[in-house]
Structure formats: C-alpha cells, structure tokens
Image 1 (cartoon, each protein chain N blue to C red):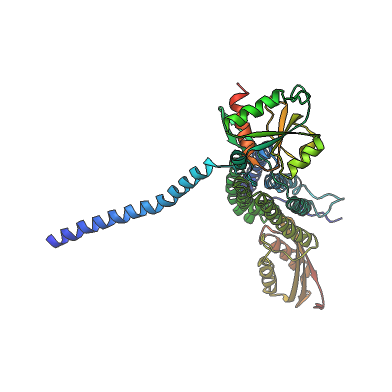
Image 2: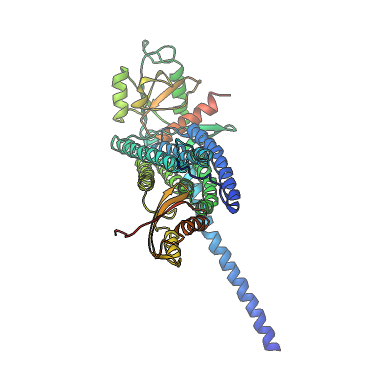
Length: 168
Length: 315
C-alpha cells in the first residue's frame, strides 16, 4: 500500500516534468522566432548596397538639378524646399552631406553607379527616370526624391522622415 | 436523326453539383478580393507581380466550370445530336492554354528581371501615424491569398471525384497547392528585406515554373480527352475500371459468345460502343434492347451506348 503510494507520486512528478519539458519544447522555437523577428525588425528592410549605413559612416552625396522653387543652384549656396528637407533629414540622422550639381542625365548615371545616393530637383511621381532610379513616396503628394534602385532602408528612412515632419 | 437522351445527374449527385457550384461562386468572389488587394500592394516586386497574375489566372477554372455547368445538361438538338457534355472539355482546354501561356510569359519576364539585375524598390505605408515597410503588408496579402484558397481546395476535391469533373478537380488541386506560391513570394519579399534583391526574381521564377507545370499537365490531359482517349480517373492516372466491368458484364450474358467495348469521355459522362458476337440470332432485337437498357442503368457515367452484332471481331 505504502510503496504503491510512493510510486504513484513519483509517477505524477515525472509526468509533471514531462509536461514542463513539452511546454519548453513548444515555447523554445516560438521564443527564437520572436527574438529573431525583433532582431530583424530593428534593421528591416536592409539596403542591398548598404547605402544608408554607409552614408551615416562616410557621409552622403546628393545630386541637385536646378529647378526652382524646389532647388535653386544659381546663387552661391544651394537653396530651395527640397534642399531644406534634405538638410534637415541629414541633421536628424547624423549624416554629413555634400552636394553635386549637374545635369539630370549625368546625375542619374552617377546614381546608377552608386557614386551619389540621392537626386533631387522637383521630380514627380511620373518622372521619366522611373526605370533607372528608385522613387520615394511623394513628400507633398506629387514630388519625390530619386534613390538607387532597391535601397529600401534609405527609402524607409526618408519616408519615415517625410511622415513625421512633413505631413500632419 | 438519333438524338442523345436528355441528361440528369442521379439524385445522390444533384446536391453535390449544387455544393460544387456554390463553392465555385465563393471561390470567384474571394479570388476577386484577392486580386484587388494584391494589386493594391504589389509595388515593384517581381514575385508579387507573378503571384498576382497567378491568382488572376486561378479564377479561370472556376469561371469555366460555372459557364460549363450552365450548358452541359441542355437537351440534344438536331444540330448537336450528342448533346452538350463536351463543353467541359472545351472550357478545360481554354483554361489550360491560358495557364500554360501565362506561365511561359511569367518565366521569361522573371528571368529578364533577374538578368537585368532589377532591384525592387519597396516603400512604406503610413498606418495610424506609423511608417510601416510595405513588404510586411505584402506578406499579409499573400497569407490572405493562400489560407482560404487551401480550405476551398480541400472542400472541392472530394466533390470533383464524385462528379468525375476534371475542371473542378484541376481547380481544387491547384488551389490546394496555392500556399506554395504564397510561401515562395513571402520568401522573396523577406529576401528583399534582408538586402538580397535577387531573391525576389528567383522566387518569381520558381512560381512561374510551377504555373507552367500545372498548365502543361492540364493541357496534356485536355487534349487527350478531346482526342477521345479511353476514360481515365480524374487524376488522369488510371484507366477507369468501370469499362472492364461493363465488358465482363456483357460477356457474362448467356447469349454472348465474345465481346469488345470502346468508350470515350464526354465531360462527366461516357459514350461508347459494344460489339457482340452472339451465340444465336434468335430474339436478337429484344436481347439487344434489354441489354442497352441494362448497361445504361448500370452506372450514371455510362450514358449512351450503341450495341452492335458482328460476325467476327478484328483485334
């Protein structure tokens, strides 16, 4: 009788341990997945050519096409609405910027070869350069910035900035 | 003019046909919602574009089935003495040509996209003032395009087998496998997310190959049915044992010396001939009439049989 009781309690304990193991077995991959997803979402999406992180480390070159009132390169200093946006974006993200003033064709070529990282100059959503460059969302409903194709982190950062600072 | 008799499904199958039609209407409505949602979130991802076109194509079998079921049981006319059963075969052929053609187009398009090193740019969407990467929304849309489709596929499969209906069967099997497309596209999107742009085009190629595969096997089967191949089961793997049963049954009749049978599929039902060498010609008229009646009431799929007396059977 006594031995039987002892046996039964150990049995219960055993089954409790088994249950605990089972729960762990189920939870472990879930936990891993959760950690993974948190880890991923911090740095998601990434740039295939690492443009955004490079810009933060080594500075960024911005191509400017003269197109007032968005950009104005006729004076000694470049000015215009898009210049202000870029400057504020760079400041907020700790990026040093350098401007490259040239013709559209030249700038798009530089962008394709990843010599510069952004091109501005009052481009619209329907720009003819659509095939050759990536487009951000329109910061005012119509006008966009051009970036190298597929650099999704840079796009993400720019659009996050637009969303926080330019739209109500 | 001999007119084929008018066709009605046996009582036990009428409800099955009704259920099948209902499921196909649900499929159509659901697929339309998928097509709209996928189009809205598609962006510049090649994998999404491919998955979207695949979804658009997958409405074809449902449409073909619903159109064909309106026509197939119309009574035979002088112009169409065999009735309208083959409308299933025709709609099946049309659907598979579309599937095969579109699959080939998608494969070429995706390969070009890969070779051109076309890097997909995927932006963001603002939801409740949060900037969210559009890739996540695409993944949600893909999950929506897969799970209900799988459920519908599982629901339709047994109905297709009962009705011996090949369009319905194709529709069910492709939908059941739809999660593969969605999964491949999700992998492509996640690939873009971790900076591997080529995974998008690679996923698109994978999807288009699976579309080509489906299209090709359906095309083969549709052509074979129209070529009046012997009846096969809905998987097109095994010859239908029903034909051997008929042959055995006829040769067991006491007045029959030898017999050969030949059947072909007209959509859901079979038409065919039975050549008989009789032991005696006595009472042949009555025996043949009774025999025809017996065979045609043996199974609902055996719809129209011609019995002929012959002296000798060429093999």
